[in-house]
Amino acid sequence: MGVMYLLTALEFLVIVSIPLLLYMFFVHNTTKRVNMVCRHSNKYGPVSQMFLCCLVPFYFIYWGWRQGDRLDTETAKHGLNYASIGPSCMWMGLVMPLIAVAIVRNRAQSLVKEVSA
Image (cartoon, rainbow, N blue to C red):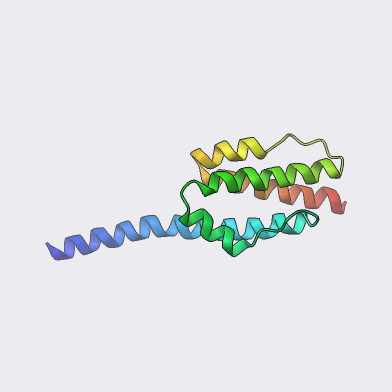
């Protein structure tokens, strides 16, 4: 009986911890990338953003909106005609946070390519 509880606890730990660790990794790297792209705006500490997204309830919604808004401002500075991603990242942060991180990451990468070309 005790072994069964131990296996269930280990399965739960693996099922919960792996996506959480991936999410923390992606938030950290995406924040670093957005800071690199948006050099003239306020910089956010990647480690602090990572912990805030994991520990503060619903902070990831604000994080997605704020990072998307920073990238929207940067694309407007460079005169690129991209659709706004701030509100969509906010809503995706509510429904599927990893999708919001992927949207921000993709926009930052495309902005780096457009500016360097």
